[in-house]
Image 1 (cartoon, rainbow over the protein chains, first blue to last red):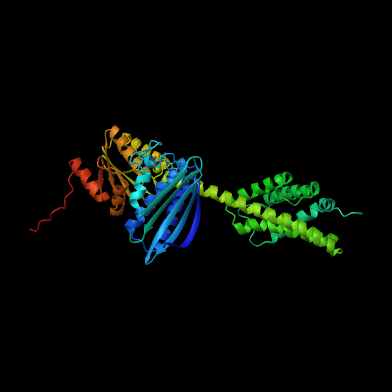
Image 2 (cartoon, rainbow over the protein chains, first blue to last red; image 1 turned 90 degrees about the horizontal axis):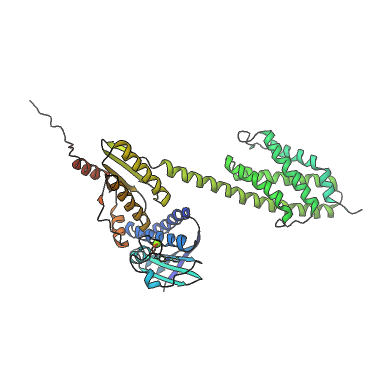
Amino acid sequence: MILSLSKDNIQVQREQDVVLLRNRVKEVAVKIKMGLLNQTKLITAASELLRNMLRYGNGGTCLVEIVSRGRDNGVRLTFADKGPGIADIPQAMRDGFSTGRSLGLGLPGAKRLVNEFDIKSKVGEGTTVMILKWANG
Amino acid sequence: MPFNIAKLLENQKKNILELWMKNQLEDEGLREDLITNEELRAQSEELVGSLVANIGAGGSTDLDGDNWSPVIEILGGIAITRARQGFSPRETGKFVYSLKEAILEVLQEQIGDDPKMLFEESRKINRIMDGLTVVTFETFIKGREEVILRQTDEIAEISTPVIRVWDGILALPIIGTLDSQRTQIVMENLLQEIVDTGSSIAILDISGVPAVDSLVAQHLIKTVSATRLMGAECIISGIRPEIAQTVVHLGIDLSSIITKSSLASALAYAFRTLRLEVRKQVVQNK
Ligand SMILES: Nc1ncnc2c1ncn2[C@@H]1O[C@H](COP(=O)(O)OP(=O)(O)O)[C@@H](O)[C@H]1O
Ligand SMILES: [Mg+2]
């Protein structure tokens, strides 16, 4: 069972907020003694999902949690927007697929960088992406 | 005769203003370096005028009402100006609190012999002034945020220097986040400098960039391509091990770009390319 030890909900509306949130994620990662490589992976994945939220989802919120399971501690981030949603999730998850003429590596790349990844989306209602990185994962 | 607060305040307007000014001027923390007494007086007079007129007009203490927008506008203007001028929140708060003090003092003086009425009217004034204090702080913080955003822009602008490390070699240390706007500035500066100096090698050092996500990578790739179009080679240096691994996991292909782990090794590479040699002088003993 995964327990949530601390919760912090952050609004993301502008590009400047990306830096703010990245620092916040770094803070909690350091707090649970996550190594530098895992920190970098987590922050990079978070950065991808944040940018998607700003670019495609009209901004949204990010829930930052410290979680624990047995002896392991980790950071769980939940990005939620009320944007247009994604009609075809497998397509969006494909390397190189982009409707924004960018690299199309954000979603599939983020998934490769973390331990757990979950995406839910409903057209017209919004998108929620959850990622989890264990300190020693 | 029913008591008319509006009339009382209107009659006492001058009194309130004088008391308030006295409160403000007596305060040791008054920032005479930031605001002149004339300016302070003008601001105070305008605010008292519109506040008194408003209490007279409707009598509603609900600040959401339309009739309060002139007062809120004046107060907001003052709060924003103060934020930009560098007043502290305490100093700005004091500005509004001391007005409340002045009005309550005048009420006490005028209707102090009727405790019930004094209580009623003071409560009304309190409610209005508390609401206005909240408005003041909200606007003050917004003003400060604007200052911060402007500074961020300025930092982005000045923190992308192009350095001529050698004849024909340029270096660009990038520190902080490489967002779209910043990339644009970096790219423009770099291309201009290549033209101005006729350099054939540019080193983009990203030791100071905290994270390379797919957007930053795309910006880097774009900058390298643009440099090549100008007939120069672009090397990326300062890719830390954890960043290199992360970039690979993301799935970004940087194989078409010359990358070096440090600025020193990038420089060594540049020297070799330009057929320059750096040697340690051998001192011969006789
Ligand atoms: N929060 C979101 N809301 C709506 N659409 C999204 C969202 N995130 C991603 N998408 C869609 O998924 C596609 C793939 O995203 P991603 O892998 O990050 O690549 P890129 O950002 O380069 O387009 C995007 O082009 C977009 O169409
Ligand atoms: Mg993306």
